Amino acid sequence: MPEPDLVEIFAAPLHRSGARYLVAGSVGAMVYSEPRLTIDIDLAVALGDEILDMLPSLFPAPDFYCPPPAVLQAENRRECRAHFNVLHVPTGMKADFYPSQKDPFFAWAWAHRKTAAHSHGEIHYAPPEYVIVWKTAYHAEGGGEKHVRDIRRMIELSEDLIERKVLSDELQRRGLLGHLRTMCGNADFV
Image 1 (tube, one colour):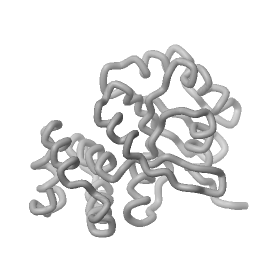
Image 2 (cartoon, rainbow, N blue to C red):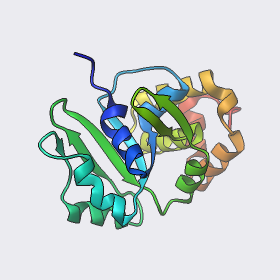
Image 3 (cartoon, rainbow, N blue to C red):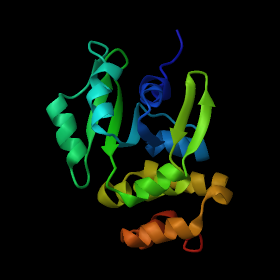
Image 4 (tube, helix red, strand yellow):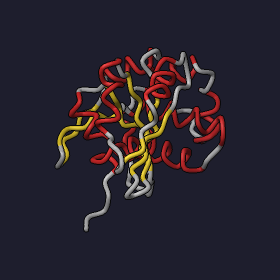
């Protein structure tokens, strides 16, 4: 039996629905660095009401736990830091959904997304700047060596794909530029 695939389980249904989503977090970082073990996938999303209403059918019980419609709507309307999970019951894998339609950086990331072909169809990935900004933010809030490791490897292996000015400007806007420089030990990069 093949290993469960986070992208196939969670991102492929979103893609087929026409949703605006970006694979970010550790799975997104792997596109620009190297594989590592993870049992969840982070999805930045900008979901209109029609797609939001479709989520329970995209991730149907009993194979999935999808929050009730009222929770989905409440989280989707939050001004900032919205979040909900969808769980794949047979594997225990999880998708963290981050409604981001009100974030101008998501709009930039959507316009600069990377699309890759997989055996189950095309998938949209966040650009490396988006992944680095959010990994920096989560590290600033709670630590985590995995964020440092992911960012360092992204810089080492995909430096030529990263628009430094975009990254620097967004980190500065969020008050995180000094934090990235400290956590990565590379003040010259940004």
